[in-house]
Amino acid sequence: MDEITRRSSFIKDFYDVSLNRFPVPVVAETIGLQMRKVLELIAKASLVAHRAVWEEASLWFRRDWHAKEILRRVERANPGFYPRPIRESEVYDDGPIKAAWEDVPEDRYLTRGRFVDAYDAIGAMMHAQPPDHNVDYGGFLEKANEWDDQIHELLGMHQVFLFGVPDEFFLVQMNVHGRPRWTRWTKAGFGNSP
Image 1 (cartoon, one colour):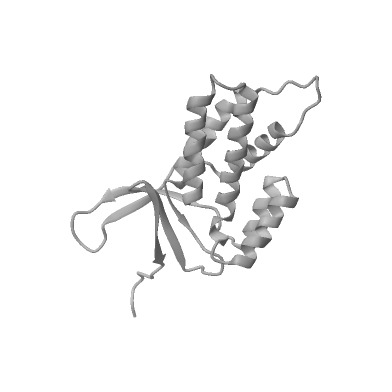
Image 2 (cartoon, helix red, strand yellow):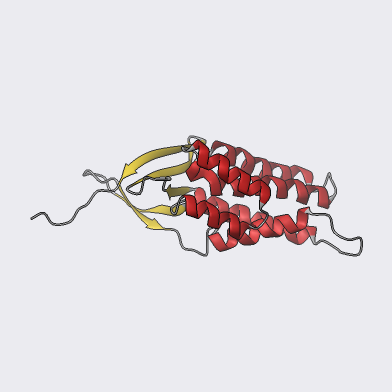
């Protein structure tokens, strides 16, 4: 999460200072490269505690350029890999429970479908095109800005489930005193006792 934060900050800072200093294709390609790394880190984040699975996933990213296939493979390794964005819906002053959470509406964050679209669009823009093909770098930068906002909504506060640990999750908050912070939670049953 630290690396995602650093790369995301670079994207914003680079865009702000570079657009009028460098050719638009160079700005778009630099931002595209950083954004692609962010997407790959999002996909692999839940595998970080399992080095062998992380390394295998890294090979998939090197060999396969299709986001849908990459996500399918990561999901096979860890069905709960994709972050689940949440937000506090209520804060309580007293009692053992301090806050209630609710899901972030899908139209606000980078869903898996938008992840695939972004990853594929970055790949298409980054590869050399025939001389008679015009790339819409300005349009790409607009989309990249939108994806960046959606990534912030996805990761701002989210749950992620680790490989092989179905009853536990990490609650990740991306900006606690300027740094990501996570806490480990265990699901507990609150049903009626016999």
